[in-house]
Length: 261
Image (tube, rainbow, N blue to C red; front, side, top):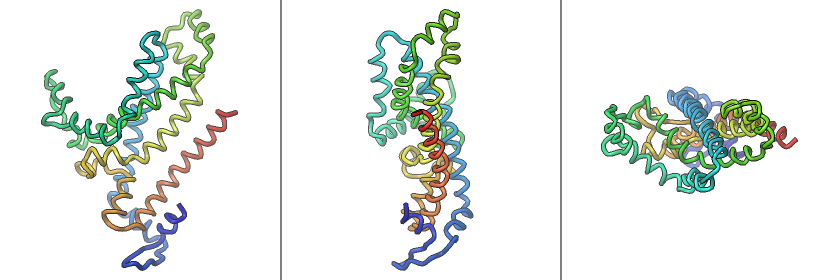
């Protein structure tokens, strides 16, 4: 981190390093892809919060309500986490393929129009989010399940005596009791999703999607460092991302202390 901080204000050419002050920051801010990368990263984070944050909680609540096959379904939900990320993403490349992909075959069987998932700017980022959610939801689901099993059963029994159905029990018992866990998971999700790189990189074969639709901040850092050989600009952008993540990490630490208390 210390090395990255100094690199952000330096330029290295032909083995000679010079101090450039704010030049690297000025260069990346004036790069048209800079704002596009932040917009795409924000879009990925927003969509991941809708799918990757809410879906594992819903699955955990459902598993917690089941009385049979609970262990088998937990293993089933966790299985994608055990797959190497690249293997899982290659699988989604096949599923999304507009010529022979399974998803478009199903859409065709239902007489629905085919979708160019990764080749369409409108659906490219959503496709990345779906793949990422499937790959990572197992861990989040198990954390939610652990939190759910810590809720005293008496609270649910009292709610049932009051005639509360499943939705009312979730609203008045589950969510209030899981408030701290949900807050921590929300911040962890934001910090993790803002560093997205592998999913769009593999799904687009190392590219940045049609019209830069899947280029992210971390991908732009990679591009500066390894495609443009500009480690100063890469470090400057990394420093900006670090500052943004530090804000969310500070919130995470504060909430963690509240949970421990």
